[in-house]
Length: 103
Image 1 (cartoon, rainbow, N blue to C red):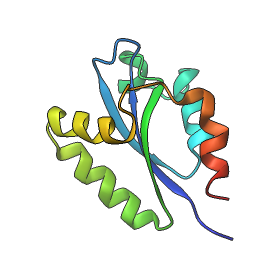
Image 2 (cartoon, rainbow, N blue to C red; image 1 turned 120 degrees about the vertical axis):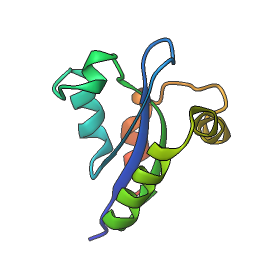
Image 3 (tube, rainbow, N blue to C red; image 1 turned 180 degrees about the vertical axis):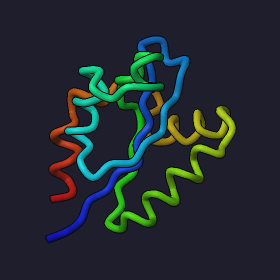
């Protein structure tokens, strides 16, 4: 069985805040953020909209990438998001399709 890990970026409704995380289940984690189950930054700033993700088969690579992205300046993060998602569309509705690509 293949292992799947995702580095993801969430934002709030007005796209003014960015949150970067890593998970082994994008669907579950987005549901947790959306329902407010995860206390802290994402709950405080209403970051529940998926705008970017990367897939990894190795958890260590995913964690390294998450740490790398967290160090970047906002402008560089915005450019990365715009390459994959130019309109910064919220991807939550397609979460099942995203995960099914990696089964």
